[in-house]
Image (cartoon, helix red, strand yellow):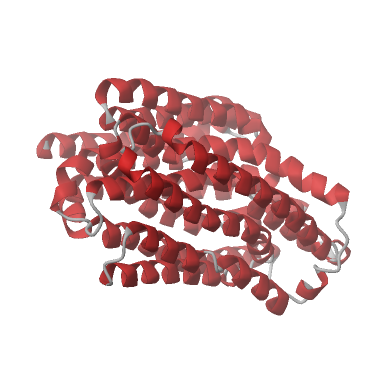
Length: 467
């Protein structure tokens, strides 16, 4: 078997496992609002959604450690047998970082619990105590996820995606099932939050056991000495990655926080629209995520490195077409989708937000294969400025338009940020990465611009027809 054929088989196999896991995660993310939105009062659901989004930002303290660990393990394994002996050292260094990050996360959660009335003054005073308890419980889930990142990165780096997709999906399903039981028993919001935290926090011990019993060198990690040089190398990779992660989270989730501060009553509707926009797009991302380790393996070998540009362009074209088709489906069917999913009351409040946010997320994700290849090759520092620009424009536009137009303005802010991000990527980044895009104009035109222009009349026609 040729090296490139082996890499293709590895990618498609991991993509299948990751898509299955992505379907499971998507089902969980879609089921959770469906379970609680019809049970909780509008204010309680807004509180629930706001607390969940805050904890997503706490997870930033994980520093993208899963990807950093995965890349280091994959690169070591594909660089030769002697380099592969470093894997226990890499895993121990990553765990050392996660312990410190988790301690910092606990302190941040305590500060958030204490200061939440000042940060979100529109939350009703009668709900402050519940908000604090729910926020603290969801914080436990965030800490558990930070602890789990090194072990998930080990399996990802070994190209054994089932090793971390299975436990992750199981913990999510268990959490939602426990919440469903709580709803059937008519439990209050605090008990529902406790049940969700109890189920999802099991991810950490599950991943630790999986590494110990399923990885040949898993038992050696605990006895490995923390290599400061290795830890510093991981932190350097994480540092640049964290800047990109913060920018991407601002694009993906800052809207809920802005709406929560400006118009608390619309927080639930915005969260519904955002979930419906990000979950299906995330499925496409799940199929592409094996590009990270596959691209890292290809970049490590001079024999296969020259094939990276072709792989990047091909996956970009396929993804751009797929995202446009998905957006057309949402534009046609969003009333029926919302009505079946969360009930009639969200069709008119969340519907327009959903169409705008889906367009924003589809637009910004057309460059996902290119971004993953940058991460795989360790070239992501060259794209930091545009990532920061996108996040800054997104946040500024969301705040300015949100103050003027409410939740709808926040959604348009996300769309403007996505447009700036993609334009910045095509204009500034592609010319600085000849390893990935040796012909930047051809990649930008054929991979992204032309497919979008071809679909644009269809989008405009459908929006005009149904509005």
